[in-house]
Length: 138
Image (cartoon, rainbow, N blue to C red; front, side):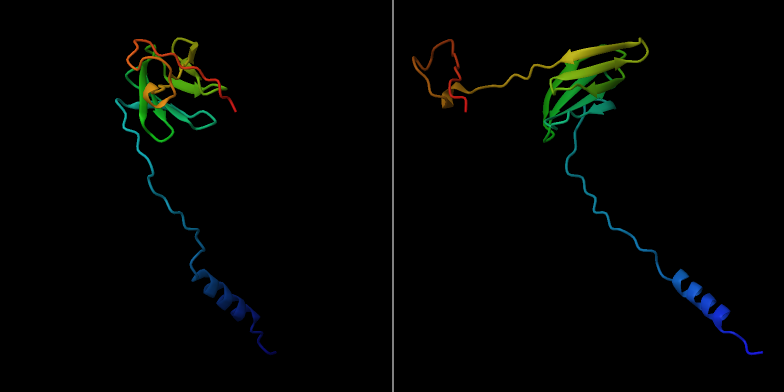
């Protein structure tokens, strides 16, 4: 009875595929931004539009960064706040105090500076009060 080469061929095929390296996908990773904090971070929240980054720190402060990573402000929060959650708008953030079963809703009013020197004006340049009127809404 003649010997069949099939078992030997199957074994050679199995061994040849085992010696091939597995295909791997390459991932290119690099740090594009670093936020320098005043204390140990406890939580991070980013609203849907990404304009601001909120960081809760262990010293009961909420640090507000711009989307580009610049510190905009540091706001004290109640001791015990251990988590934060962005609200439905970028100016609302939920402060969670798990130990005291409390959630506070914090409203943030982002104040925008308008330099009067570059805007059209009427009256004395050294006036003690400047009123900015926005009449050109397009």
